[in-house]
Amino acid sequence: MKVLYVASEAVPFIKTGGLADVAGSLPKELAKMGVDARVILPKYSKIAEQYRSQMKHVGHIFVDVSWRHKYAGVDMIEQDGVTYYFVDNEDYFKRDGLYGYGDDAERFSFFSRAVLNLLPLLDFFPDVINSNDWHAALVNVFLKLEHQGDERYANIKTVFSIHNLKYQGMFSKEIMDNVLGLDWKYFNNGDLEFHDAVNFMKGGIVYADVVGTVSRTYAQEIQYPYFGEQLDGLLRTRGENIVGIVNGIDYDVYNPETDPNLFVNYTADTIGKKADNKEKLQEQLGLPVDRRIPMIGLVSRLVAAKGLDLIVRVMDELLQAEECQFVLLGTGDKQYEDWFRGLQWRLPTKVSANIRFSNELAQRIYAGADLFLMPSEYEPCGLGQLIALRYGTVPVVRATGGLKDTVESFNKYTNQGNGYSFNNINAHDMLFTIKTALADYRDSNIWQHVVENAINSDFSWHKSAEEYLDLYKRIAVKPE
Image 1 (cartoon, rainbow, N blue to C red):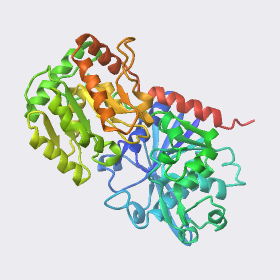
Image 2: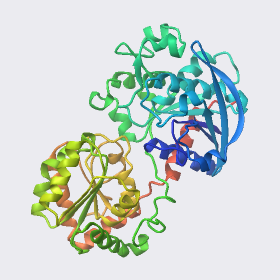
Image 3: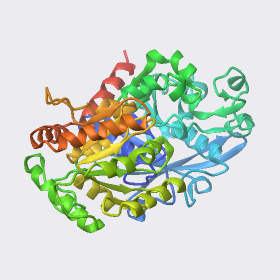
Image 4: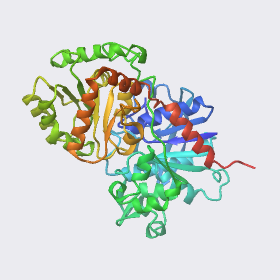
């Protein structure tokens, strides 16, 4: 089985979001299963020199971007059993950032076309190309429209993975001939047209053999108007070809036994040491040091989609009624930053609002908190709850997307469940759920079961990679 994973970023080379974690972890797990897994991404100037110095130049071609004739070099690195390719063009990728430029349509349509045109140079024709998000969506379009009749490409199947439907890559329709170099009929027939603009993600969905999402529930949700970002109608027509596979996390990276950021390392067998981390964190943040006080953690971008309006509505009420502490880490919209600063000012012995980002502090919150709050309005998969579970910190979530697929509400009569969840976007539903969790916390016998269930949950990439491999095998064309 040969798989080419196409992404705009990948750990450890370059990262702005969760896609990079997936692109860095999934192919590595597939390789362990015997798959010839390779990854291709742009060669950004922001890739660290330690990796750039290891790259070997494979060769170059020229790629037509409408009337432009552009150089496309390709370098490679082999790491953890995976071959990584880097598409090189300094006009497009030698910049201070990755995204947000006026010529992004040109940059990423070039990348998508280059991926396919480079395959003969690489002497690698995969069974499956798995492209990700709008930046690589046109791979599916160009494969179908520009490589028909070439038997080398004939049996390649495509999976298009949606990590967040909200970001679709929409551009002026003038790019059809000026940038994409495609016949207007593919705009006029609706394949690429979206409200009189070109929509890269729509093209990726239309032309993919299978559409993937990062959780089973999100695969269903995006077929409804509330979550569908105006593509729900199209997605319903492709419903039989939509597959949801929840993301995993790298259990070597997120490991309470070896994490160098923790005050005290621990395992499922030495879970009692977890409270040592809470005491040290309380001391670091200037909160009263007492391991008996339950700590609620929140590590998040401070934006409305993360359910922060629910927190704003009831957190004062919760903290004044309950003996607990609330520790926040994150940055985002100024209104939320200011509100959390005000919450700390009002309740300095119960709140630590850290309006910044620190990987070290994030890991200490994951390890030191007792509850991890994640009341998202929508969440395609979610990373925070998976890390929290790995560290034995019990998630309190809204049952949406990947949160619903990974967090099962604890039932004290059966001792099943690894967290707490509520269904509605309602502040008092959240408040009641947190109070239920705090009540269980005060019963040490119950709480022991909850924490054990959390830390023993398995959301490693191995489990998810097996599902991806099954999918690839299902759609791959076997040569006669």
